[in-house]
Image 1 (spheres, one colour):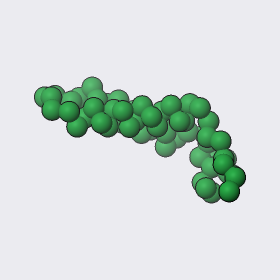
Image 2: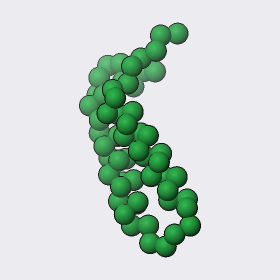
Image 3: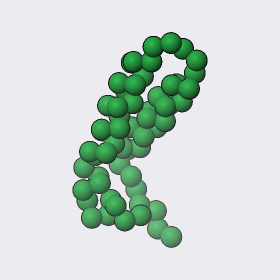
Length: 59
């Protein structure tokens, strides 16, 4: 099976998304900054140009 290389910025954004999501699980009041960051990263990942390429959605 061939591996399709993901763009480095997309991988970094996904890793940051997971880190932020895990940070939300820690007990602390008022998570507005983390929630905003998670929303921003979600939009960045979803709207990444990689998904518009023919190879993007087919893996």
